[in-house]
Length: 155
Image 1 (cartoon, rainbow, N blue to C red):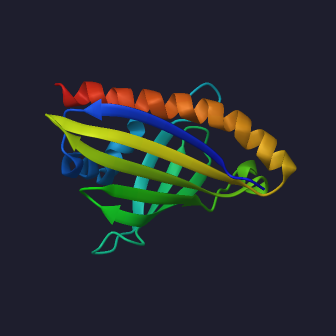
Image 2: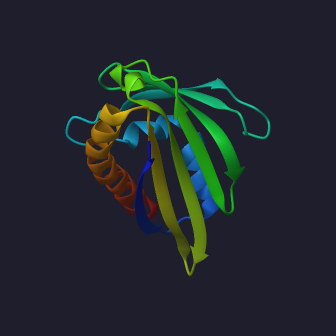
C-alpha cells in the first residue's frame, strides 16, 4: 500500500526553539480542533519522557474519546521534529499501521517558516480509501492549527 502524504506551510513570528517549547507543552495540544468529523484533542500527557526526548511517548485523548500514542522519533529544535502516531484504540487501527508527522523549521527574517508533513500508512485497500478521505480533513485541520499558531505568535 502506498502511503498518503499531505503538507501544509506557514510562517510564524517565533523561533524554532519557541515552537518546540509549545509542542512540548501538552496543554497546547488542545488547540488542535480537528475538522468536521476528524476529532480535536481533548488532552495529551507524557506517558514516558526521556532526557533526549527521543523515544518519549505522549498519550493523546481525542474529543470523541479515542486515544493513540505519539512517540517522538526525531528531535532537533533548530531543524526538525517528528512523531509516530500509533496504538490507535479506535476503528482506525483496522485501516492504518501508523502516521508520521514531521515539522521542518527554516529561520527567515523575524520568524520561522514551518513545513508540516503528515504521512499515513494504510494496511489494506479499505484503509487506502479511508485515509485518502481523512487526509483531506487532516490537511484542513493542520492548516487551521498552524494558522492559530501564527496568530498566537503575533500577540
